[in-house]
Structure formats: C-alpha cells, structure tokens
Amino acid sequence: MSTKNSKPNLSQAQVQELVGRLYGMTLSQVRPLPSYDDQNFYVAAAGGGEYVLKIMNTVDSQNPTLIEMQTHTMTFLHQRGIPAQTALPTLTGQMMSLEDIDCGSGCQKYLVRLLTYLPGTTIAKVPCSPQILYQTGKMAAMMDRVLQGMEHPNLWVLQRKNFIWNLSNVPLLEPYLHVMDGDPVQQVVKEVIEMYKRQVLPNLGSFRKCINHGDFNDLNILVEPDDLEGYKISGILDFGDMSSGYYVFELAITIMYMMIESPNPIEVGGPVLAGWESIIPLNEAERNALYLLVLGRFCQSLVLARHSVTLQPENEEYLMITAKTGIRHLIRLWELGKDEVERRWFQAARVYSDGK
Image (cartoon, rainbow, N blue to C red; front, side, top):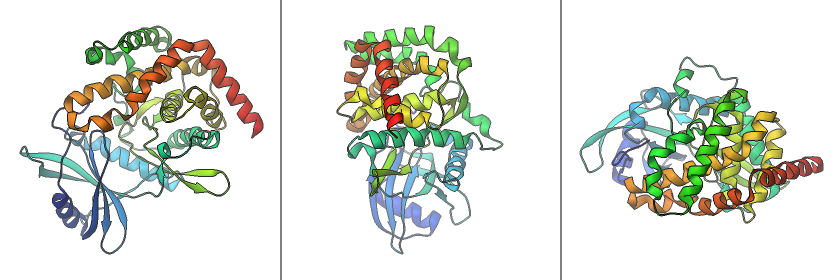
C-alpha cells in the first residue's frame, strides 16, 4: 500500500513542463482527475489530441517491472478489442519515465506515463439498468478470458503474494481493524474475516486461476449512449490493482462495486452474474464462495478506505466514496444471509438469461 506523503502533488505548471519535455507537446488544457494513490490529469494538446497524464505514487514507482506489465496488459487488451487505454512513447521511445520531482517536500522519484483518453462517462453516473449490469459482467469475464492468452517474461510480477487488495488476502485486514474502533460494523467485518478463513481459504484450490484486473468498479468503467441497448461500455481504466487470482474474484469484485450506486443493490447480482456466466460459467466451489467473496471485498474497501484517510485526510471525500454506501450494503447482505442472497442472485441470473 502507499504510505503517508507517497502520493504525488504536481502543480499544473509542473505538468506543462513534464509533458513538453517528455512528449514534445504544448498543452492547451490541464485538468486534475480524481485518484486514490496516484495523481491523474486530463491534458489536451494545442495541436489536437486528448490524454491522461498518470503520475504513480512513490511506493509503486519503485516497481517499474510491475508498471511495465500493467502497461503491456492494456495494449494487449486494446489490440484484442477490449476498450483499454494505451500508453504513448516518450520522445526517446520509452513507455514510462522515472522522474525526480519536488512536490513540496523535496525531490522524490515518480514513474510517469501518458495514456490515451477514452470517451464516455463513468458507469456510476448512468441509470443502473439490468442491461448495463449484464454487459458489465460479460465484459469482466471477456477481459479475464482474453488475459489467459497473454504471454510475457515478467508475468511472475503479478503474483503479488501479500498484496492487500487481492481477495486471497482478506485476513491481512486484521492489523488495520483498529481504524474502525467504535463503529458497530467492525464486528461484522471481524466475523466475515473468520468465515472467510474457514470457508474460502481451504477451497482456493478448487477455483480456476487467471489474471485479475482487480478493481472493476463503477469509477473505472466508462459507458457511452447506444441506440440499441441504452448504453455500451466504452472504456476500462486503472490496471494498478492487477494481480494473479481467480475468475470468481473478478466476478465478486464486479458485483460488489455495481451495488454501490444501485437503488436496488441486492438485485444487482443477478444480471451481473448472468453476463459473467454467458462467457465463463462458475463451477460448484466458485458458486458456493461468491457470497463471502463479495462480503470480503466490502470489508477490504471499508477498512482500507478508513486507513487511507488517516494518511490522506485532504482526500477523504474521494477515498470514502465507496465506503460510505458500502457499510449499508455490507450490513444488509450480512443480515439477509448466504442462502437468501444466493437464492436471489442465482434465480435472477437464470431468469435474465432465459429472457435473452
């Protein structure tokens, strides 16, 4: 995870200088974009062209092999019809550049990339219809299936054994639970972690392995209006949480985040599941773990958001976007229980698929 003072804080003047020096562009517009650990800017070139300048935090900037792997993955997906961003080379032909930048507390090293700007609006801002939920589940499965065909000498870097956002590592939340002291939901989180240890960890060997995007959320999926079906997915952003995992992890993450903006959050699982299974049907062990995996992701989001706020209090509004709503959803899922939630999800998925 990032640490205090690891997030970059470039000024617009520094952005202008950086893009001019590395990419030979004069910018007509610079606009900050929301971000969790890194710093992102929308930039428009005076000669035409729209891009995203991404400055990695100092912690991730120490792992250029991982960032290079993420960049390669985006290009691999783009070339195979999945709407991911791609990186532009610098004037010297590099896909990223390690820069010494002073953000106000002395020079530190930051990895910098210039990415294509994808059209559309985040899925969080459009009506959460069954049609777009089905598309989202289907796109997540298509993405993971395409990634199974990716070969690269540095694929090993995606193992990320103790990466705290990987759903294999829900128990690693325990040292951070103190950030929820005094909050009644803390007890629910503790019980979810214990159930996860007993019911999910022993069965990981029955799940099918893959490479996960790992953050297929409502702010990382772009959509555009579509005459036929209302909206279509036009972009997938932010591969910073990529890691080796399992197909069912991606599905659980997708369901969890699609619940955040929905007026009927419990009903989200059905169409997302139907879309996913139109590409990759779940096996029995994966189906049996789905409920707890969704709860596990809610717990990761709640605990790690609270922790991040202690490091970046000035960024609290963005960091807590998911967590504020997520608390209600976690409690509701917990109260309904595994049997009832699974009954609703799998029955709704069958109904939706039969109607397609």
